[in-house]
Image (tube, rainbow, N blue to C red):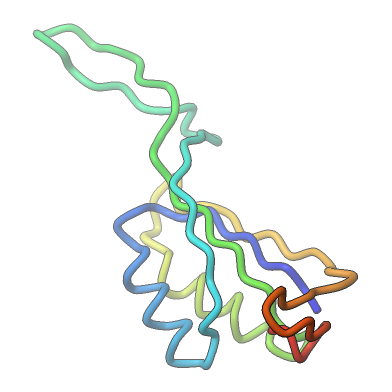
Length: 112
């Protein structure tokens, strides 16, 4: 099993969610967060003066999938979250040792 963590622009959430549902990925956690990367935040004008806002609103998706589903899940995220502009986000993939479903006590693949 692998944990996929994707940081995307908020306005891309619905498109990514729909794409994931179409490939059969139904368990997704979405967390509102703020961050910055190469764009180093952004500036806004307030009463004529530029104000450095710093952090940019983002959505972090956390998705645990079976090993064989990693590539299709990442591809769906990359395709539907991309705008081609700085700040599109990142996708991280890392291994998961164990998963438990609390209600039924199922483990690993059965718990997904």
